[in-house]
Amino acid sequence: MNEFKNIFSQIQPYDFKGIEKLLDDIKGYKYVVIYNINEVLIEFAEKISAKKLEKFTELRAFNNDGELAVRSYGGKYKGRIRTDGIGGNTEYIDEAHLLWGDKNKNKIISNEYTSLSEDRGMQLLVPFIVPVGENAFIKIRNYLSSDLDIFQFDDWRMVEFFSKKVEMEED
Image (tube, rainbow, N blue to C red; front, side):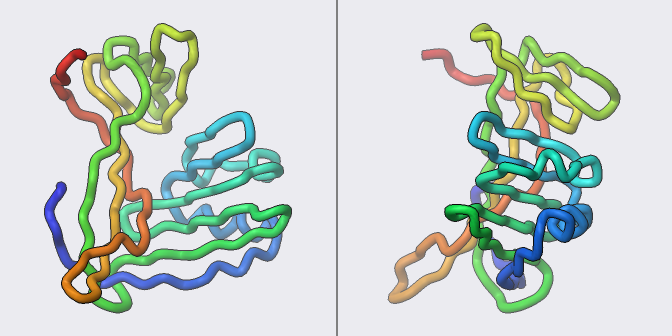
């Protein structure tokens, strides 16, 4: 990660045609992150119900091959589909973003979920296993363009969740 690479990638507008259609469309992806006014839900895309999509402000359904992103703008929805492996050649850089939680307090809920928590009493339920002592991450792909030899970020997407053991410096 953190090195420039090339990939074929394509962006298409997403035509929002209601919650039921969106529910069908996200099932083609592995994970979905739903931003509501009062919470963030992270779930397997196949397990999302229409009720969980009633009042979202932003949604990102993704897997290694692409992402469907939809936002609510004053009751209207706009979105895009980013697909890797087809389309034009573009440069990108992947980054690992640390998810919230104390690695020593990870609690495996089932063979699919882990509860990440900290001393403040809050928890984040994630749909993947994070062993005690490992940190949870999400891989973010940043797409770049260059005009006049200056790189710009054009778009970004979520790619995958993973965990690994990392020693971090304490402040």
